[in-house]
Image (cartoon, rainbow, N blue to C red; front, top):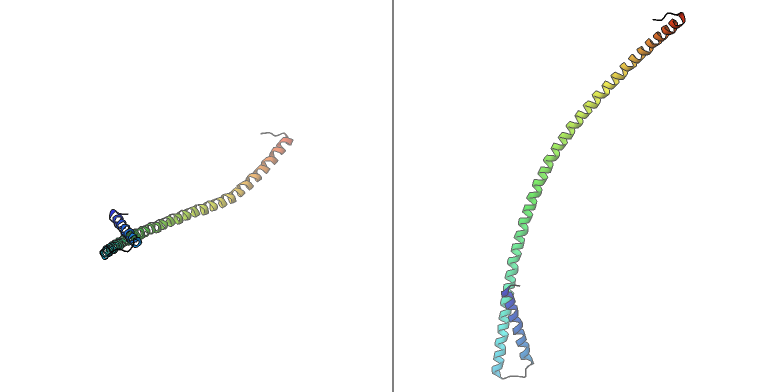
Length: 151
């Protein structure tokens, strides 16, 4: 509570206490009734003033809260849009790099597969020739062994 609000609330409570006290006293003279009316009017006036100040302060606080909320929302919205734009651009770049890398990898795989197929084909031919040559050579060596010709 602010000091002014506290002071107003205290005045209101004192006025209410005074009013309650006067109701419990025995009937007084007409002059005393005027004092009670003045105390009642003062209490009512202080209460009205306190209420007006509270209402005015609440309205000002609400306006500040509303304005602060709008400012925070605008900043959040702008930040989200910027983040989305960066994410969208980054995703496009990442996709381009992934697509390019995949194409290069596929080209290398395709080229390696073709080379392997050609090498396997040639290996079969070379192996067949080597086996055929080995058979001829083995036959000559066996023949030389039995005939006594050794070179």
